[in-house]
Structures are given as C-alpha cells and as structure tokens.
Image (cartoon, rainbow, N blue to C red):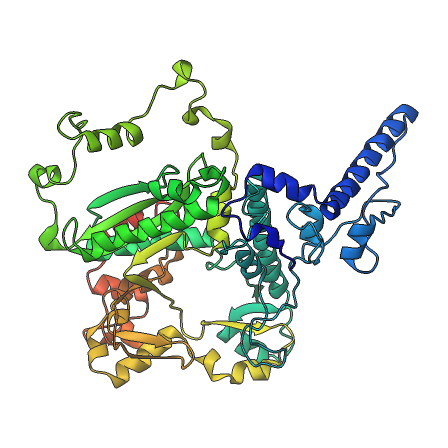
Length: 548
C-alpha cells in the first residue's frame, strides 16, 4: 500500500488539504478517467433516446495487465454489455470506491494468509476472512491519514456495503455446506444398513440455518428461551434499564475537536465508545452492587431510527436485595423532574435526554414522525459497524447451556453425503450423545445422582471432544432442557420428567416410579402426580407464547 508522506506532518488534514491532494496530477488523471466514462455513457444514452431504440450500455472499465498502470494510462476499453464482478475479486472494492483506492491497490481476496502462517501450516484457520481484512483497514493509525475514515457519508456507505457482503458470504458458505452435510437419526441409519441400503446421499434432511447465525430466527428464539430460563431459575427480573448511545458525549467531541467531521461520520467511534460505557455499567451493577447483590444479567443490543445503538438490560437481584415495598423503589427511581436550582446537572440531563419534545402537527419533522423507517427493515452504519467488529448483540450471565435429549437410538447424526454408512455407524461419537453421556456419568459419580438433567451443568461440564461429562472445576452455568409443546406427546412428558428425575442410568430409570417401570413417559408423569392439575400446562403457556 502506498501512503502519501506529505500528510505525516499534519495533525488533521483540512478540507483544503484533501482537495489539494486529490488535485495531484496522478490522482486527477484517475478522476478524469472516471468522468470520461460517465460523460460517454450520458452521450450514448441521449443518442439512444433520440433514435428511440433499446440497447445496453457499452462502456465499462476493462483491466489489462497491472491495474496501477492501467489507471494511470487511462486505457478504457468497451464491451458489448455490462459484466458483473464478484465481490471476492481483488478489484471489486477499488472499482466501486475509487476515491478510497486512488492508486488501485487490491481489495480483499480469498488467499490472504494470517501473519506468521504459511500455506503448509496445520493451523485450523490459515486465511484472513473478509471481515478481518476490512476491520484492519478501518483502524486509526498515528501519523497516517486515512481517506476512508474521513469519507463522511461515503464511509458510512462502504460500512453498510461491506457488512451486507460479509453476511452474504456467510450465508453462501452455509448454503454450500448444506449440499455436503445431511442429518438423520442413528436408529434410521441402522435400519438402512439392515435393509441393505448403503446410499446415504438421499437420506435425512439438509442442515438448516443454524441457531449460531446471528440475527436468524432460530438465533432469536434460542436467546429468548435462554432468558426465560434465567427467569425460571432466579424468578422475574427486578430492574429493566435502557442505555442509549449519545453522539454528543464529551469523549466523542474531544476525539473530533481538531477535525471537520461530525459524530455521525465516525460510526466506528460511536460503537466502540458505547461498548466501553456499556461494559463499565455492567461492571458497576454487577461487581459494585449498585442496586444490590446481582445474580444474573441479560441484555440485547438494538439500533434506533437514527441508527445509534442502545441496550435493554434486565437485572436479577439476590433474594436478600429484592425490592419488597414502595420505599425500596423510591431509593432507585424518581418520576419527578429534578429541581433546576438545587440540582442543575441532573435537571439538564433529564431535560435533554428524557423528555420527549413536541411532535405530530406541532413538529412534523420530529424523529418519531419518520413512519417509513417503521415499515421497512434497514441497516444503519452503526449496526453495520457493530457487526463488522463482531461485537455480541446479546449477553447473559451466567451462561445457559442448552441440553439436548432424544428417545432411545434417535440421537441426531451429522454426516457427509458421500460417506460410507459403515464408517458413519462405527464412529463412537455417533453412538453417544450429551443425553446418553448423562446416564454414564450417573453411573460413575455419586454427586451426579443428586442432580436432575437441568441441574447437571451447575456441577459438571460437557467435554465435546471427549463426548463425556466431567466434574466442573470452576465457573457456573445453568442447564436448559429444550422446550417441547404439549402437542408432541411423549417428548413433552419426557421434558417434565427430566426436570424431576435424579440420577437415572438408562431410559427405563426415567420411567420407573416406586420400583415399577411404566409403559410410557406419560404414565410415569401421572404416577408421580405431575399431571393432577393444570399447573404444568399453565407453566408451558407462560414459557412458550410464540410456540403454542
């Protein structure tokens, strides 16, 4: 990458400095070339309109040899039609944003290796991802002027553009893998083998969009159910707090004081500062006991109509710090406007940030009157930056471990479409699961026999590579059995029992009541007195308003 050293001595370039730099002979030649293309397209469009016939635009930029020499020679060629350039092509970004790449330096390409990593390395991840590449290029560096970071609205545009490309590549990767991977139960594959069918390429179903894909429907639902699990464990939250990013924070003004930029021109700074303040607030609440002893915290990040981030926080207090009467509420919450004379600082904060100004007919240009933004989904520059930086949009403490379960022999098996069925069934990892590992652990540890399945993660850790449970040495986690609606019959009754039965060593032990093995999980529930009234059904209705 070539850096113009004339800017190294400048603390912060002014608009005149930037204009002079773009007036440089070489850069001016590039801009003239693009102006030439634009003018020729306009002239051809006018000629076609006059002739009253339809044809495609002919003028595009064709690169022959080195892109730098092509740009400086202004060697423009013509095609018969427009050509699409892949987002992974090194010239894609320079051609789309020539002001940010005035000498045509390459953009992202798929074969860039990580630092100190060779192509023969055995590292799991050897190559730089598109997200990592772009994050590297939007960093502030001392004594180096970045055209991109001073691009104002064009910088916001490239942030949103790159985020959408990154997301598209992730979806493309998942879609590509779905052609290779399939999912079915272990029992079904055993049946196929017994019947002489060894072709697994048509069996099972393709893996759908995983719950780990941020923003997906399964991702949102799983996080919602995890939050409900915290409610079940710690009761209802005691505080609901919203913290919003303020573009006029003193830190933002200090950072931009020697520039001509506005706060909205640097969404990367707004996101980083908001994350720092959010983490500081969570630490203050959790470690400093601002509202009392805290047991759990969960928050989610959203983006306002103006595009700036805000967080919705739920705080669960320890029973000794719970709010029991109105006087306890008054210690933390005030619904009155502070006195302007006795507390001017607090009055200013409330009047500036917590009082909604006139709107409707009195002020039709008010932010809340932008109805179009309520109808359409859009991605702001701040949201794009937040996701490019890979900052979590959901946080919870303690962690919630999702506990899978299944009927005998019906654990899910992931396999390649071209794998041999014998190899699939002979893998010991496919024959075992987290659920059956619970049975094995109950055989080996006395402590395990005193815990239900949902309580198990508080004392044990699932080792995915070893496919077994081991005693927990540090930390704390809550278990959440996957929720099943009553319409699923036996699976629903099994979930009820998994929250009651302790220390089973096999499926029969779960159905055993007073030494008698019941024929079904439903019968076991009735015999234990778990279905004598509608309390369990009401509990499911509360936990599953979006599923039932």
